[in-house]
Image (tube, rainbow, N blue to C red):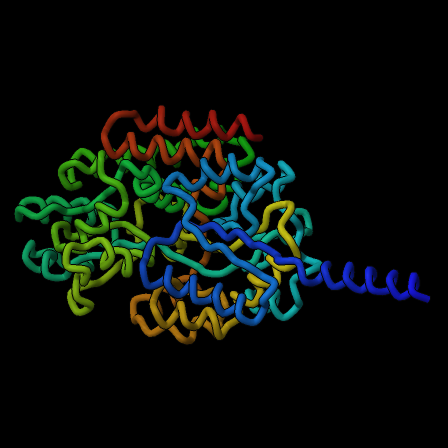
Length: 417
């Protein structure tokens, strides 16, 4: 009888231990806004309070996020929850067996909350690898006072030729036309991305990915480089732009030292964080406009460039990590980020809490977009994406020809086909 009792006690202790053992969740990201970071920590603490056997570490994962992550995911100590832009990089990670399928763990209501686009963005070969969180759009932010000082009407900037003329006029007024942080090459890539999107259109981009019709050496992509060089020839960027990173360039715009910056909706907050005053351009002096249209473009002027970002899970991540992120993505929780203006949630109920008029308009623009292209350095995969970033930075510095730029992207893409 005693031996049976002892056995039952051991069994009970073993069972209890299986449930009582602490589950550690390592969550990595790239965010830098103090308010958003505080809210992220508060979310983790709230979950821990209601789940005493769970411990969550929320941490920024270095400036060179993609490179560090590529190495970390192949180690035995890979982070569990990973901020992701999806696209070709996600495909590469899935093909390498570095991520886990979460479709069987994530509840149906969590799936429906992100909508078909959110599910599609993180699905590969019928398996779901991530939870979509937010959408973004790249636009030209501009300083109304500086435009007025230069005598430039924003309506004239709706075409590429009009933008080039406006840049000349702004520069002639003694104002730096555009802030750019080319050290972080992705900032320059937005120009080549958008020019290629306008000139080639969705169909042209899809054909180029296959390698047909000369791939990324097709005329539309060479012309994208040529048009970028037309802008670069005007020397529109602030002094030292080649050595400046995004934070610096955002601060230049936020301090009123440049008339424009081509950047995502997140720049509304980041320009405050990085400006000397911490305030940036006042809302009544701030505006934005869509990337201009070009002659002979095959794309649609309502096509947008941006992202559908979210969270993916390393191959050894626990079910609890998935459940935590499902809770984190609840509409009531995301509404707090929306109210703070940190990003535009893909969850429609959460997006209703957006108070910032600029973000509300951007959300409408994305909703009306005929095609929302994902950032090329994500959608094309690691190698081709890095090539786009490299050639874009070189084009901004007039250090490469348009043909060579297109050829470098095609060569990198060819290696992945």
